[in-house]
Length: 70
Image (cartoon, rainbow, N blue to C red):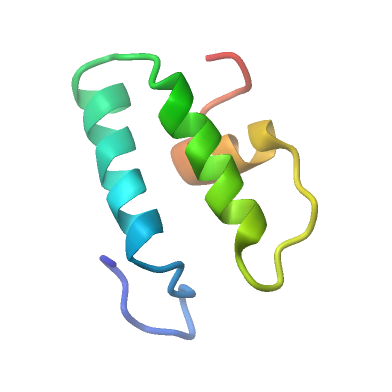
């Protein structure tokens, strides 16, 4: 995790960190749609403790700055 201060950012786990790194490389660096990775991000986020039932588009926008369908 890039930010280790628990007051600023909660630790989502190694799986989440690996997925985010792969998403950044796939989507931002390579310009790929990374549809499966984006679905994995929504799934991991939904399973996190204290998570509400949030739409996948909201998760993508919050984590990646993307609108749904981008």
